[in-house]
Image (cartoon, rainbow, N blue to C red; front, side, top):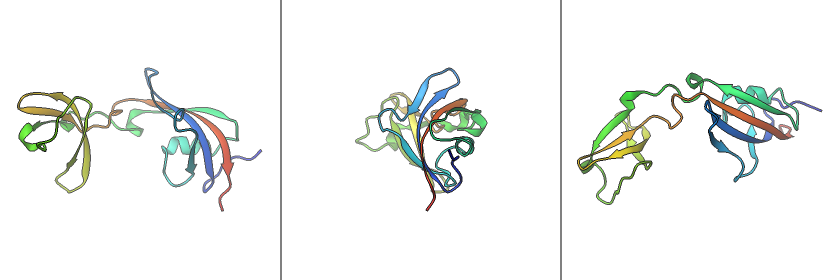
Length: 145
């Protein structure tokens, strides 16, 4: 049985867990996912492990927060005056807002608290500061064309 290699498309099932075991993503609802090795569609540590796997293999890949979504940065938590929000906005904790940074790039902010004058929003990725692990099962290897 052959191993996957760069350029191959692989079909995988996975579950992503935080360091405390909380599942934060998986393929249960969407079904197996296709990934072309070498395109950077998944963490490099997972891609490297996939290249050593055969169909049917199951592996766990641990990724420290520095190599996943980075450390939490408190400067990414900001207060936004309510008058700076669209009039139709009804911000609620957990809601995602799109904002433009000074360099023109887009950033997603997550509402963490709503006050009368300000909305507190967090620009960190929700998994920033978390070590994560992928439980990956290789279902199929489609050779590169």
